[in-house]
Length: 202
Image (cartoon, rainbow, N blue to C red; front, side, top):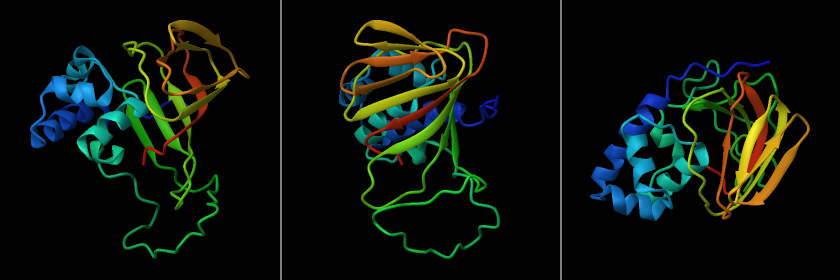
């Protein structure tokens, strides 16, 4: 089973949210309202008490006029990348080889491995997500788009509209993201999930 990356990025996400929020002259209440999150949760994230998932961070980023990548250190470059030659990709597809270095982001207990290069006009965000056990449970919330999760290994509690569903390997869930939802690993093992969300986060 693949272990999640060491959490080297999560500590900077909260302070960066606070930094960008203050640059925009927004109060915590105002940002929470724009992002569809509770003030208490967002306050905990800014202080490093709670972690925030990528989709919730996507809502915060949108409210602040930033990309999700702005909340992390520079994304890992491909091996040997200095001034890479930019090759225009066709609008209808991308091809990502398994041996290529994949960009990964760590937020709290979750490590996100991006499965697709950026493609003009493509709307899906496919990822492999490793969810470490423990950590704080996120509040359920809704946002624009759709979400799909397929459990590869481990178990996952997936709350949808106030109802908890325990997912095992081979189980999946597909929902409109506007329905309040949250996921949590309450076991002692790492859970690995293939997740596809819209809109794209990066």
